Length: 203
Image (cartoon, rainbow, N blue to C red):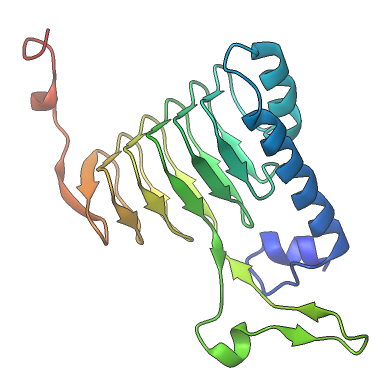
């Protein structure tokens, strides 16, 4: 297997691999260029996202600034919105459904490091160059979700459909569909029902 194949499969891999380094460098350049655009530069932003985030649906809007490790390993559905400071470490696949909104300062992190220090440390090749070994787990988010501000979604998490994640949450485990969840660690608070309608309450 190539190092990229190992990475996407969730196996230990060498992030200094040439192919991966080139993909990361390209993504980091594209995110920097995107962050230097104004939100009114719609054509330029679309052109950059075509390269950085090619697997996306219709009406995809990223306020910026953004940061992606790779971009090409993340897919988002129609009507996607991400507010300021959206950070994505997509060393493993990230799949996001349609009608998903992210508040400001949200992070999706598939990357993982070993817990044992002797396995996490930098190693040295015979030629003297350093490297380490990392791994990751994918993240999946269903349809019609709202992820509020300052939320971190950790590696290996699956979030169902119609979920609201409260502000400041750290999501370390799966969240079932049709629920409101919040906290650190994030936990289900209750089911979302028709009684949660805002019609007649705020209009």
